[in-house]
Image (cartoon, rainbow, N blue to C red; front, side, top):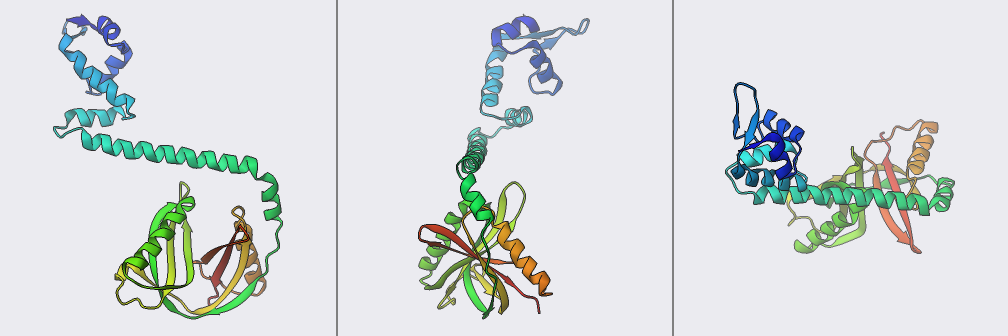
Length: 257
């Protein structure tokens, strides 16, 4: 039997941590002397504490470890889930790193984008049904969703015409609810969940050049609508194209009659 101080030295876990583990019922002493409340540990408990230390090194919280230790199921599912969590954290950090690099490298370019002029146009668009895919993702991952759209069209042998457009709703934590869609010749074979109807009507539009400061294009559209006493719908369409190596986004917003 070992005192808490001796067991702390043996296991390289502080006495304070051992007391905390006891308090939250994660790792209990082998025995506690009633007269003085001294904690004593057994050599056989070293393996259990090593397991806790190992799980902590994988990034599990103490409450998660407690559930894992109490569970009779295998550890593999917990490890697989934790791996997904870690991969997402890495992706989040890479996303932040990319944003910082873009900020450092593109200051001059961003200034030019901020000052671009916007031509506002009106279009009459007909109603049509389109093949679509939806997901909640980062805007930077839009390419994967576009690929899924064309893979779906190929799977169901439908022909896409006029390219693709998308609707984007911005959520918290840099996530977006995105719907990518495209007009096709025949929709009959498609699952109903992959079909969306685009409303006919009159739309105002403009083109934004570049990646950053797209909010300026939207502001110009709403400024135009306010001056013309027009009410705009809250579900704009975006059409992305690359012209001479430069990204362009054409934004359409329907006028509510």
